[in-house]
Image (cartoon, rainbow, N blue to C red; front, side, top):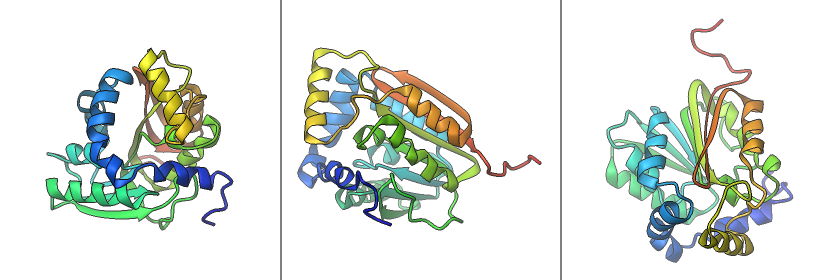
Amino acid sequence: MAGSNPDDKAVKAGARVYIPFLLFFYDFLVLWISNKFVWKCSTDEVMVPFFRSALGKTHLDIGVGTGYIPSKGIIRSRCQEITLLDLNPNTLSMAKARIESVDDTVKVRTLVANALEPLPLPESDKFDSISLGYLLHCLPGSPESKTLVFDHVKPHLAGDGILVGWTILGKEAPMNWFAYMLMRVYNKIGAFSNWDDNSAAFEQGLKRNFEDVAVGTVGRVCMFRARRPLDSPIPGRL
């Protein structure tokens, strides 16, 4: 039931941070300055290629931001349909318009939902690829509780599909003074909730749901890929 999660208010508070005024500067401040100089993980050199490497004919993007990465990723791809899922209608509207401006042959649908709860999608909806970009560090709770997201997306990943994601780690990764100050500010205002986030907890959550898991770090960012949902039939296997 919507609102039944004890952290529901905190989730919505984090989503409300992304107002239209902030989204206007998001690409410059977050995807260029912060990723390049603070989190040490380039948007165009690391994240976009990582996203594109997994992109299938049908894709589910959770935590959409401004839609910059999917809009870049669909160029020269085989993607035919993208479902955008987020709690914030502002981000969904901007991302949808951006993707459609790049390729109007790709069908784009939007869905307002909380990723910490079962996704409001039919059980029959299976995606060839799913992405969780800069989502986990925005969610409240312990890193272990955040892995509920993996439980909720697993039923919707096709047996031969690919899940990819990236998130900013907490104390585990080294940080310069600027990174530390940004972490303090973002955690204080509720945009982040990630001081205790660590790659081991996320890897364990992924392995609980998927047979093939790879986790690594680039700068302060944890990058992960998962395939073969457990208890799901794999095409070509008996």
